[in-house]
Length: 509
Ligand SMILES: Cc1cc2nc3c(=O)[nH]c(=O)nc-3n(C[C@H](O)[C@H](O)[C@H](O)COP(=O)(O)OP(=O)(O)OC[C@H]3O[C@@H](n4cnc5c(N)ncnc54)[C@H](O)[C@@H]3O)c2cc1C
Image 1 (tube, rainbow, N blue to C red):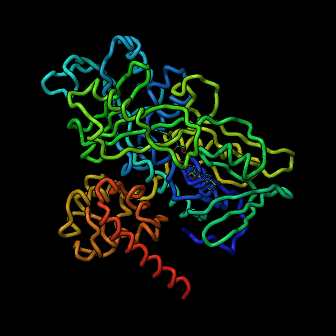
Image 2: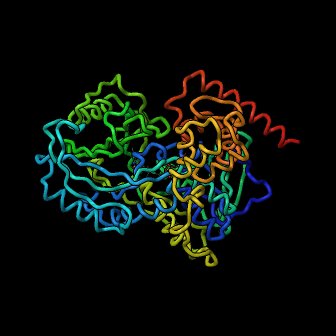
Image 3: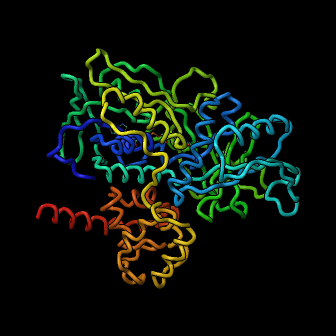
């Protein structure tokens, strides 16, 4: 946890929530010269923003729901984000097997024509028809035709962390494991109270941004004791991870009889990630987990399409999240709008503003943040202009090619395996050099925790990326949790305990 700076108790903007929308707004505002404070009650990206399908996509199926504004914005963002963070985002081709009884070919062709042309597209290839060779196709032999188009894949939790790092580089204060417990308006400012392991703190801010994701409405009601302008629908989505069921780097978008679609996405070279589901969720968002019904549903959709037949025993991991969607009173969870709504509220003219974020996608976080700043502009007339479209995220600076960086790292560090240098290049980009320092061999990287995780990387994650626990490192800063054994996790926990003690003693001294 970053210590709260007790010297500074006044900020222009306080942001509640360290998911993609909170860090996106904090980063944008800090880059415009505003003083920003962001608090996250758990770890960065510990909720919806690490439980996504990990796509930067226009959302082909939203065309069916006539969400043209959202799709146009999201399509254009694909190339903007790809240029901003080519280490954590990569183009991906998607194959949609044709199921004529579900959607006629003309409908798909029209959808893909719009998809190719609605948003600006320079690097991503367009769509076309594909015929499957029954001998080499991973799909069942009766599936003979389909359509192929482009979107992008992203490391979702690292997108959050890189935005938080950039916000900090622009002087924002970002604190984790710190919950906002209440806030009141007074004399044109917000008095805001926080609680963490060290106690209760208060700051003042001119504007309060509520980016609490699934808790957005609850935060307004309970912590602020105010009325929410919009309702929120919590829609659970779950994924399963299985050993890869086909070779190659393309994803499949499978149409199901219930009109929903499910993705099969190549994941971390060895796995296939299958998801997602859509079901109303009424319990505590902290405790969301996959249900047996969702497992059966995802296995059935996959088994209806692929030659490889999966059973529950094949599942290596599952993950679930809740989409905090703006309530548009749709009966069907899959049809509720995925677009975002920003609600600015002031009870009286001189009241300090509250801006609440309802809904949104990872893909549109940057545009959502720009839009948030437009809403807040009148309160900060001296704030700078929009700047995020052309700026690079941390680690993308001086990055000529990710493959080139993989080789460079491997050449520099003797004895390093390709898998680890590739993981570093894709997670940290050129920031990899920050923790490699002057090392020239794996033997200089400190304790080896297995699977390419060394002490030098762990220290960096603790010092620079707000990591505290082994799960912060294994689940959100990397995806090594899929490989680590209980004993390996314990060794990492012990190291972290000592590291935190050492850091604490240093701080006291
Ligand atoms: C299954 C699924 C698949 C998805 N797939 C995609 C996809 O492929 N592409 C895409 O673009 N989008 C996708 N999305 C949507 C996307 O993940 C979400 O829109 C986005 O992550 C929401 O981010 P957020 O910041 O609003 O919420 P969150 O990530 O949940 O962040 C809110 C944060 O606020 C914190 N918080 C709450 N209350 C407090 C408090 N009082 N004090 C301090 N902190 C607090 C929480 O701990 C939480 O970390 C998917 C969503 C789901 C569920």
